[in-house]
Amino acid sequence: MSHSSQIKVRGFHLDIYQHVNNARYLEFLEEARWEYLEDTGDLEYFQSLGLAWVIVNININYRASATMGQTLDVTTALSKVSGKSAVFNQVITLAGTDTIVADADITFVLLNQKTGKPVKIEGEVLERMEGHLKAVGEEL
Amino acid sequence: MSHSSQIKVRGFHLDIYQHVNNARYLEFLEEARWEYLEDTGDLEYFQSLGLAWVIVNININYRASATMGQTLDVTTALSKVSGKSAVFNQVITLAGTDTIVADADITFVLLNQKTGKPVKIEGEVLERMEGHLKAVGEEL
Amino acid sequence: MSHSSQIKVRGFHLDIYQHVNNARYLEFLEEARWEYLEDTGDLEYFQSLGLAWVIVNININYRASATMGQTLDVTTALSKVSGKSAVFNQVITLAGTDTIVADADITFVLLNQKTGKPVKIEGEVLERMEGHLKAVGEEL
Amino acid sequence: MSHSSQIKVRGFHLDIYQHVNNARYLEFLEEARWEYLEDTGDLEYFQSLGLAWVIVNININYRASATMGQTLDVTTALSKVSGKSAVFNQVITLAGTDTIVADADITFVLLNQKTGKPVKIEGEVLERMEGHLKAVGEEL
Image 1 (tube, chains in turn red, green, brown, blue):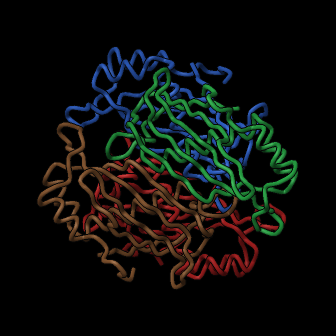
Image 2: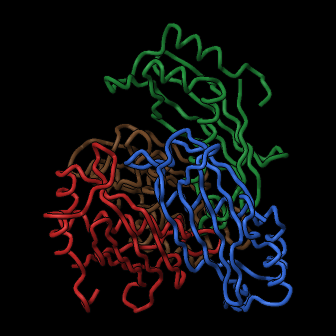
Image 3: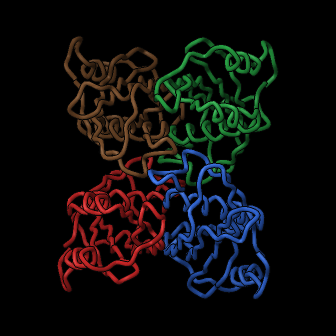
């Protein structure tokens, strides 16, 4: 399962180099993950369990620059789930092309909001997340 | 009483026009107000009373552009207090010059954090705030 | 003529008060103005004349708070044009309600990008902008 | 050689979780790198050669949360230089403690600003950068 979002680059997204600033891309990725969590029903599901998604690592490659007026596609998919953490793979392309602007792996843990501590990913939660994993060879 | 902060313009503050973006100035002003609230002891004082400062209006003039590597001075002073609201006057200049980059009036009310409703500015709170008013003719 | 944009409030738009931060609203307004400029063809038109829109004043009222998951409507309309400057009126409401979250007047001048100096708004440019003025009583 | 910067966490740096948002950390890191480039004279040196620093990868670990009023130390050091790219290692700690809030490796290439293409890191440039490498075991 994967989710696709779009964003149009505006003047306030750019920096001194006239390209989208590298911090701004993290906002584009966060926006896309919120959309993913809404569309899959995960936002409601995890909130009902008192679990928050907490990011522990972001590894992002900047491959091409994007500038004013361009439209970006952001695809978001769960790519890996283990007992301790899970990984979103997100890819930003220039809309309508194969040009990858950036791609990132976002690793997170699930936090019990009452205790403030990470929980093991197991049982029903694990099953649900495994059901959302991007199938091998799935087209984004 | 007035407070002076400094900020250096960086590449990520700029936008498509190579100048500091107008939204970013509001962050510079907010930073300077936090420093003011700390230095005057107001942050602690109002928190101890369960009162939050809530902005109801910002009126900002953009008078000159600022760009990469320039240092900005931000002066912050309470300029007006009434029973319902109060006003911060903030002026941003190019450091070491008289060139005004932007100036703003920030109008706020005091909110009772328990009820979520604005409170009248009176008694000891009013006195304290009046004591902080910028004196007429005071050099910033 | 008026233009309507929508934005959904995300976790990264909020600040310590769990409400959309006041600087972030300026980005919402800028996004809506870019959409307006594209939809009206003004972006292309003014670029072809070598003219840039430069903001000289923003006067924004914060009337209600907005938080995570809410959808905001932003309406954008030219409300005033004179020989020296023009004004956008922008109103942000909670989608599907009459609740105004914020409203703002954005005053700008037209800058000749070669000389870096403001130009008089006159002739064909003035006519075009007057044609875009919000009609009295027009529903937003 | 390593450089140390400080930043105080403000209300507008936080997000829905009342912690510094993960995109905001990239701005803290960028601010610290500009300071490093100024203090070492690298900013002037590379500009004089028409070379820009372009980030190709950011790998950041979020290890502890930071919130309102805390002061953060950011240390910045060149940790690796090769013929094709170089790496900044940056570590954010809670000031006055050993608590690491985040640490990141920032990989960049040098871009010839005229051709827009990456250049080989060699000769005098390579020597200069190697001279700036953090010594093994150097205290940050």
